[in-house]
Amino acid sequence: MFIGHFAVAFGTKRYAPRVQLAWLIAGVAWADILWTMFLLRGWEHVRITPGDTKFTPLDLYDYPWTHSLLMLAVWGVVLGTIYFAWKKDATGAWVVGFCVLSHWVLDWVTHRPDMPLLPEGGPKLGLGLWNSIAGTLAVETVMFIGGVWFYATTTRARGAIGKYVFWAYVVVLPILFYGNLFSAPPASVMSDIAWPGLIACVVLLAWAWWFDRNREVVTGK
Image (cartoon, rainbow, N blue to C red; front, side):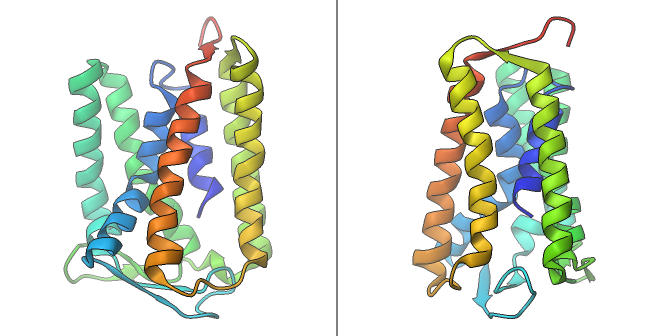
């Protein structure tokens, strides 16, 4: 799942309006941020296998420390605690932690049974939505529209940056998502997946921080 994760970040702004959007996006993307780092270190592994599912050529056979349910619960506590230590916002800390854990739930829906419950041993689960391109596009698109609507009605722009930079972000994310369908399979895990993924995470977090600081919460939210 891709824009579905961002949908959760946008949507949870309504329930934690004091939390900078970049924190919420970091939460929903935390598993993948760590995954790119762990790939680069050789701690986790992925195979490029066109046809593994209809939607992605990636065989995600080894990522227990970033994508198992237990470890995402642990990472959620870690990131939520860091947020609370910095901001002293208990509600925000819970929401940031929830965002981290939500990653497993959404991936469980989309992945084939490769989502581990435990970092070592135990079953692997997945409902396999990725085996339906139409289903994947429909679910993620509806989620994304809903999440953006929640964010756009919870906050308002304080200037051009808050308005146009935000909407540019909203346009670019689906382009990246839909464009994946027309892209050739990656040739290299390191040069085509790990490094670009890590760079994209940094750019998208900085971009979100930029426009969110130029928006304000609508009174009463």
